[in-house]
Length: 139
Image (cartoon, rainbow, N blue to C red; front, top):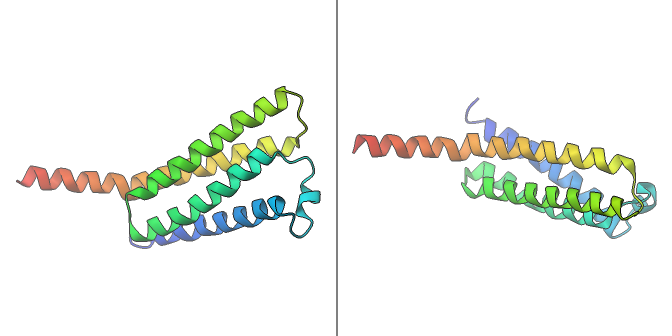
């Protein structure tokens, strides 16, 4: 199970990333009339989601390759999403139009990203630190 875990995480992250890329790209480029269905979207949030989706896909590859930079990509995505969330609240406080579902969706996306950050840290970075400690102790 330990060897399959990175692949399972990578698949989940890829699906999440591709879905996010499709939806955000559809709003940005007005594909399939999704822009109209989304209602009063906030472009800052859509672009943040789009950029995060690309980072998710790179991070999924990082999970498969067991690369230390995977955590950095996930943290970068988290920072982008949190920044956009604050931007959304500034937009709302300035009287900008928005959909109330956007707040919940951003909260959910940030929570999911935190889970992936923790998975990256505990499956890639922490085991490496422990292995380095063992090597240092043996010398």
